[in-house]
Amino acid sequence: MRLFARTLLVSALLASATASQAQIGEDWMAGKVTTGNPAITYAGAPIEIKYGHPSPPASVLVPVLQANIKRLNANSNGKLVVKEYGSGSLFGARDGFKGVRSGVGEWGVCYPTYEGRTMPLSRVWEQPFVTPPNPMVASRIAQELATKYFVPEFKKQGVAWGNYIGFQPSDVLSKKPIRRLEDLQGLKIGAQGFSPDVAKALGVALVNLPYPELYTALQQGVIDAVFWVDAGFVPFKLHEVAKFHTTLSLNGGGAWTCLNPDAMGKLPADLQQLFYRGLEPFAMYSAKVSGVDFAIKAAEAYKAAGVEMIKLSPAEIKRFKDRLQPVVDAWADDLEKDKIPARSLLKDIQALVTKYEGMTPEQLMKLSIENPAQVNR
Image (cartoon, rainbow, N blue to C red; front, side):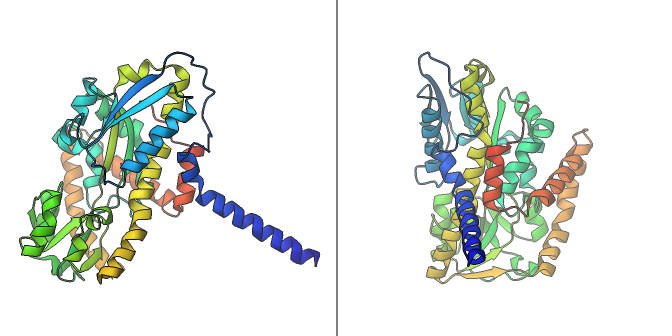
């Protein structure tokens, strides 16, 4: 009887620990987990930081940002006030670096994609099959490798590195089934920020359309498919007109944030520590909500809409990777000619993917809170 009671107790404790771990992201965001937070001794007037981003209110990332702003305010005893400027109202998606560098905003979303060849290493996630399927893993890897590879590129832009919110790597939503490499041949595919070299290797024609126009373009046959992610397919209702979803995890993307180094350097030490310590958990929870959690909601939406979910065989995925590896090699070779360590970066990313890909979202979230990667900004 005692053994049975002890077994029940152990089971209950394990279940409690599992539930607690699963809740850690929500608890951290709500300000209930204060691991690593300094004691706030600053007694002066509240200090305001302006945060600019291009996301509309409907974005799944906006509530996470707003919760983080609330957390910072509460954990700083009201001394650190972040004021949000969304929908490009402070500066647009293309002007993040300029806006933060000039002090229009002290913190904001900054896209290396729009800086061309001046930030090549920061654009590594755009290369095919470099980003792991779990975007939380990409967020952690970016943070670990930031000092070595990404921080120098951000400094050249006159800003400091903030964090990297990894997005789910792109899949394809199409009007006909994509079950093998050849099924893509000749298709007109809507995509933004997609490499022309990848499109050429796959034999597809890219059609660059604003996101709100994708639905009509699919409906009218202007395009046959879209390269994007679940957090785009479903909110824009593309699954209503394209009934085949093929998981590719092709190329990644994300939202980088950058900081005005002068403004952040003037923060009192305690507020500065509170702010910096929360950057990785903020990125990790954002990746969880937009990539991991939303994928579950999207699966329900696809089922309700009668979308066929296609999973390629390992052999077929290998065919895709073999076709696109020369694109990655050419990208790296081009940078290496200018003494830019692209191959070293790719090797380091793969090593860290191997290290972290087996971790659950809860474990990754816990790691970011209790042992965030150190970044020399």
